[in-house]
Amino acid sequence: MLKLRRGRVASTEPLQVEIAGERRPAWADQGLVGVCELGDEVVVNTAALDLGLGSGGFDIVHVNLTRGLQGGAGPEGAHVMKLNYTSLQHPVQPVEPVEPVEPDGQAGAEADRAPLDRHPPVLVLPLHGHLAPAAWALSERRPAAKVGFVQSSGGALPDALSGDFDQLRERGLLDEVISVAPCYGGGLEAISVPGALHAAAEARGWDVAIVGPGPGILGSASRYGHGGMAALESAHSALALGLPTMLSPRLSSSDPRPRHRGLSHHTRSVLGLLLSGVGVAVPSELEELWPEDREPGALRAACGERHRELVESADLEAYAASGLPRRTMGRDLERDRLFFAAPLAAGAALGRLPTQPEHA
Image (cartoon, rainbow, N blue to C red; front, side, top):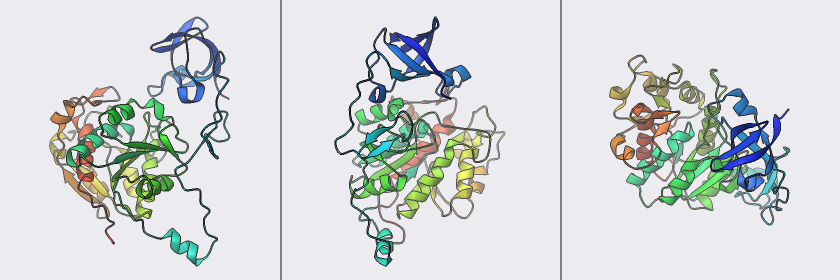
């Protein structure tokens, strides 16, 4: 059952809710529950904070009983639900076209395999912390490109939890965000990753697509039970549409968890399960940044003969001075240079990918 508790808003900057005399940090998705003002009576979900989670360790406002019960009907003509069949379901208008598909048959099958008119290269991220450095490095290589982000599952579902989106938009490094169900709130909504990428190429005119989860990736110590597996679906979707596809590997020189130090098991699992080859970004500074207690050839071994290495230099100093986010899970760029080197190399490599599929 949901762990719901009544409380009152004790502070709005930052948001805190008082429950049984205790002031607790909270977060409210204003797009769903509206604005919270001082003294409002609210119902919050306390599960994450009560569990002491480092990611998402705050209460989440479920409903504002004082002023949040007069929600609107959603966009005009909206016919698709996000968070469907939950108490938070709400209507959206998806970017996928609403025209009916032709009946089953040879004509329909041929239409499904028809090539796209445009083929924006796709970069698949392992977690949200790669977005800012990848987008920055891409802008250094292709400053005029129209760049969009497809928010997949694997991490936070609401777009509003990411402060990176607003910062990247303000600096002209990100043009649009499409949130794929069950994610929501990106400004543009999609039902599936293939639908989002198809719309990005054909209807939205993106030059480059970046796909990855929101902040706070889900995880466990198991081989496949983690949010990083969302990269598998994203890469397969891009490949199936004939889009040039590459992966930014999750690397770290100082993560305290051995499974994430060096080459993370998240990336190793995805590379092993992919049904077709992709490009894999490799920082040219890899050897000097690699942790001494990890196997130095791990990334190359994971790529094997199926995946091609795309070696690019990572300009860590310039990114550090850019003013963009430079911390990951409590570690600064200077403490974990390898983590940031991977998406910086990926963004640079993305700027070199062709805009036509290799078989064209």
